[in-house]
Length: 316
Image (cartoon, rainbow, N blue to C red; front, side, top):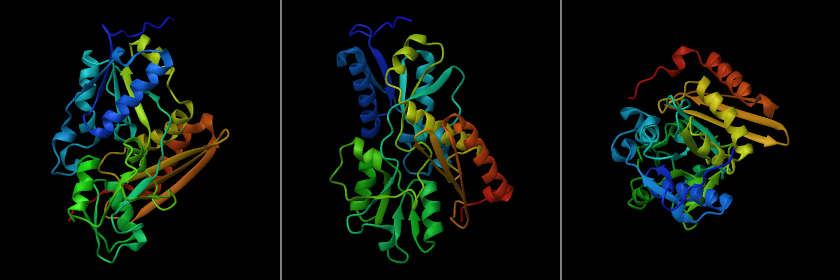
């Protein structure tokens, strides 16, 4: 089909959260589309949408509704036609989209690793017994406590800048951020040490920007094909299938990573009890074509090994 391109008078409206990282991701999307179709920036409009997850900073995500709090208002505006596409951190996305929407475009994936952030220390191993660690991630909390049950973990909500200020104020000795976020923000001055996946398996889809659209918008679908990264899509097909099978939410610590070598895909997955007392891990290796099936199979194995009581827990 012939693509109808946006113009300054009829720009493509890109919906996003208002955090610095979300805006950086929206700008990257705009710039890639502009380059692909030789368009000027004024053919695009960045539309900042306030979401509940950003408005409530004093409680853990699991207590106020989970991942959907970062997407609900944006998806409502997408469905109503107020915006044409929505740009997300894919790790924040539920595995199922609302009727009428689809998440099928992914930009080239950045660094998948977590970054250890501390003005004084360079690794988890250097933390003294009983040290205070700040994180808003249930996955990171569970992984840390599984490895170091002596640590004290405190809630650390907010965007990158907010969390770094809490660290400088002495609320905790260290925190963790996605290395991809630091890279996209150009924050080379942050005292960060990447943590290898063998030491801390990352969140599902960490480092990947996803672009959501209306299913019936064929013109936008055609445009997005020009910037879709096939390899990232293949890796996320496995990871998000794993997450879907595990019925992952912000209340379930889940980690996973798919890596490609030629036409072979290796998928690793991990589920943990939120207090870190137990962790189960597994992996699959297969062809790219089997990505989604591998995710489902590994998820079913982990569920079977965990049993129903594994996810029954209550905060102390």
